[in-house]
Length: 83
Image 1 (tube, rainbow, N blue to C red):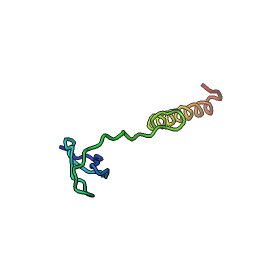
Image 2: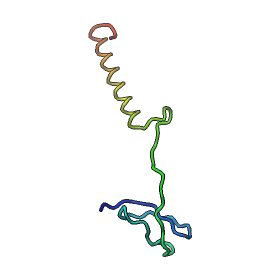
Image 3: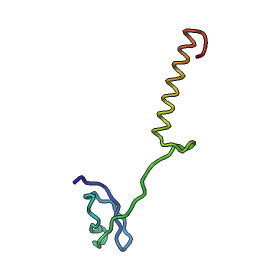
Image 4: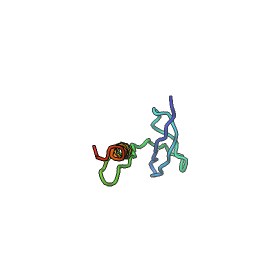
């Protein structure tokens, strides 16, 4: 079973990150020794500031747009007109 990082919180409110099997739900708190339960954590994602798209999608769109613009500039230089 692969190991993963999870956040755990004990009854005293200590929160720690542990690398455990995905099936493990309880570990010992390193601060006080009490049982610590695995917390449900929010997924971490970062959206692009203006459009709200995921960064990968925005970067792919920019890359495709730049390629298209380069093709159009090349066509204009060769033929004297835009497509």
